[in-house]
Amino acid sequence: MMALGFFVFGLKTASPDSVDEQINWRHASQNRVGSNPAYQFVGQGPQTAKLPGVLYPELTGGTEQLDELRKMADTGKAWPWVDGAGELKGYYFITDIEKKSTSFFPDGTARKIEFSVSLTRADENNSENLAGNDVLSMTGGMGGLVA
Image (cartoon, rainbow, N blue to C red; front, side, top):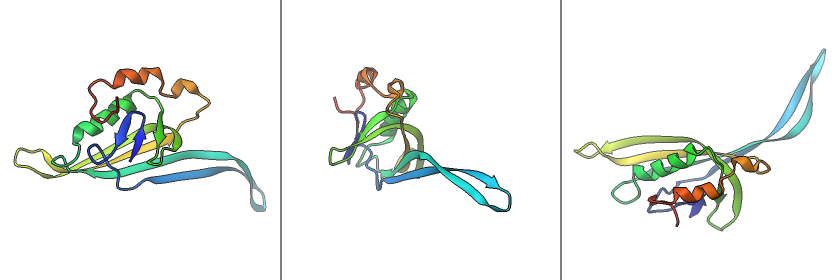
């Protein structure tokens, strides 16, 4: 379906219901006496994306899939995001993971886990923040990752 770093989003891992992307452009303003503010275009603002979805642990990945994404976020690195057609969308930081568990089994485990992963595009000219060789150490034992 798509991949963020070595994590492949799919039916057996975490499959987003949608991909919500936002791009904005910045305009600095200067207030003027007796007139509307003057604006100057100062460039593109942050590009963000949100990947909401639902996990059913009996059929799809469970919380361990979200734990893998959390480990990726803990590195502080930006990961290559590749869509289902194989197009590189850019390098993105994981900035937020939301999880809501509902409809529980008698033992207390969730039947349904709603999640949302928030991403922010990195400055690709700053290679210090991009995931590189250090990501190879993350592939051991992580089921949602491609080896």
